[in-house]
Length: 502
Image (cartoon, rainbow, N blue to C red; front, top):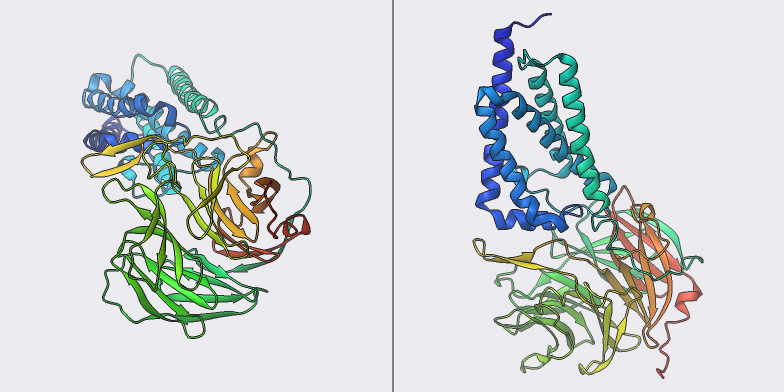
């Protein structure tokens, strides 16, 4: 059916005004919240190295296209530009979803509330709208063949630019080190996979008979799973004081006791796992972010220094009215003392030691219960300095990462004399394709500060490892909404006993 010129004009005008509204709104949002937009680009695995330039180029291009769309004389090149820009956005999201080591938490811009897949569909829709507009736009001096050549060459150029950014991005190069992992043997064997149905669980503790799971959405709910992953029991925890301004309660189990804390209040409860009733033992002391039980009456904590927010390791005595004991020299500042000292706080009952693993550098510290430093150890990668850049968003009163930080150690667990680290750094000869299918766990002998073995924890339903805990010869992993158990082989478990350090 032949479409009349009047209908063609109406359709082209409608499409043009859709793009005018889209680009005007998008560009204005970017300019009004420019620092946040630039910070979001800095989180991208493709654009972090070019965040400053792209932050200016994208809204400038969008405003220019709007001006050209308003002027009938320039509508054809404006529609070509709209098509290419939306195609580049689409190619960028496709690469992020399918070929990137990590997916940023937000794609930013006008559709910040959409997830990446919804954004991809939205962009594809506007790509087709631009093609329809180009096809129907009257261009007496341009033949259909010429139109096809212009559209094809423009599309190819746009896609090549996006692919080039991907190939020269930090996504390929900056994650690789020169170290070589020992992956030849099988130090961990998968035993069982249990579907928890929800992703809101985290490890609160483990013993020889049970695994204890807290829940971020039901903060006073304790789920206890037997070590065979066959039987589940649910307990409702009761607190003797509930009129505190809780924000985020966290549970830690170290039998026969369990502890509940909220470092933003701050407060610490303790109870017995026999009845799951907790009593308030500490309130109103220093603010803290993490706590780990040392024994029945004391906890190791990571405190935030008043004013600067810098992180400090300390110790809380539940039966004493004394202030938190702090050692200001344990966590070493490289940049700001807050972001650069982020990491995992752990305690090993078997060797009676506190272990703190930095997230953004290849270092961990081993400390005795009196907060005396034993030594500073290193993981096998070579990233000794935190690779982070920070930006202050004055309008929002926030400090954020200016670009995606190089996360070295994602998560960790300790049992006996062995430290287990979920590393984020591929070594030499390791395929990025494997890293898209699994997460790697490195193991270390703490007392000798030596690397042992590494093994893979495979993804489930395209979801990656997010938490680990170890007890005896069992390692338990939370992968998406699945709880998975692994049996650790003697190559690792024979290192559980502490050795004397030379």
